[in-house]
Image 1 (cartoon, rainbow, N blue to C red):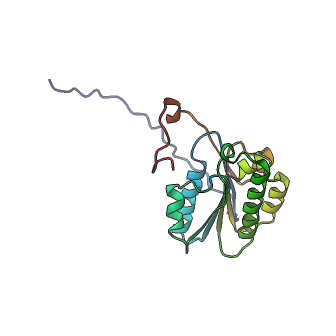
Image 2: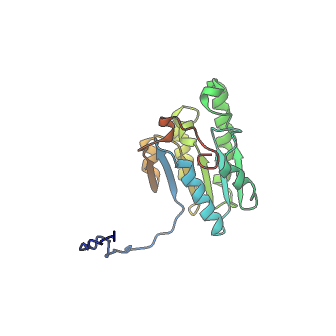
Image 3: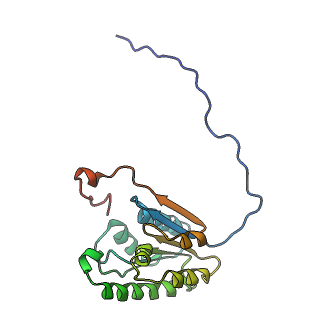
Length: 197
């Protein structure tokens, strides 16, 4: 039995007009990857790879995960001339169970953030999971905002973590909210090495 092709009239739905910028402003961006969906850190690390490919030096400070080995961090650690990685967390809060210790750990990580934010070495810095550290009251929101406002003009900063405060959103140049539509964990499928970590 031969297949019969049904001809339908196709309507062009592609955008054909583009309005360019009135002016071209160059500056270092503050980027927030937030929301309840997966991909906040993944997007930041993808940008790190793009930046490294463009000749940038990148530094990453990771606040929460601690010694949990992830493929992306292991890869980025393997190119220390292009990317310096500082994994400074003690693990998830349900593992640490100690607010005072968590505050000290976050303060130590924040000290490293301030140093690389103002150095002349890195063009892109990523403060991974810092939004959680702020939301859990490990870091003071106002202090973080004040420091971000003093960053070098051409330095790019990416902050990740769920539920960014409206004050952080206000100072950011680019905000992306990851929204979870469907998650394999809800069907009993655990996180898989090489895909989720």
